[in-house]
Image (cartoon, rainbow, N blue to C red; front, side, top):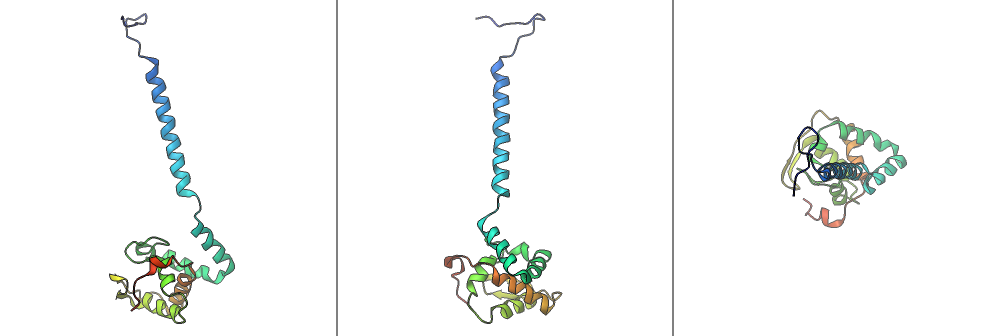
Amino acid sequence: MTDSYDEDDVPRRPRWIGWAIVIFMALIAFGVLNVGWLIMRPTPAADAMKSMLEARPELAAGKALIEGSDCMRCHGMQRHFVGPSFEAISARYAGEAYAVEHLARRIREGSVGIWGNVIMPRHPQITPEQSQQMAAWVMAVPPAAPEAASQVRP
């Protein structure tokens, strides 16, 4: 078997390498687009929150306060980070008459030991009215499944 050479006595590369590179790059582009689509698509929880805010526009101020403060560093909508998720908080205090006032006080004064050994720092810069708005929004979050909020109340 002899190698094929071009007119300058330089060996030619096989064409399959070029096609393999093109196919590989196309697969990478498809994968990136697929992951981007999966990340950017709206979730049912996001749709529920949007419809809840449309039905109760007074809660938008509480949501804006939460997004503008450091709450999202420790709490996720559905996921437990450092502190419990907003869905788990809503599920734990669902149906309680004192829930908004209790959560508003916890936002301002902080707490420890309610959700394990996690410290909830106090936020003295938040006014009582702002903490009421924030707590009202948290309580309006559709509750998580019961197993997510199964910890014992204090």
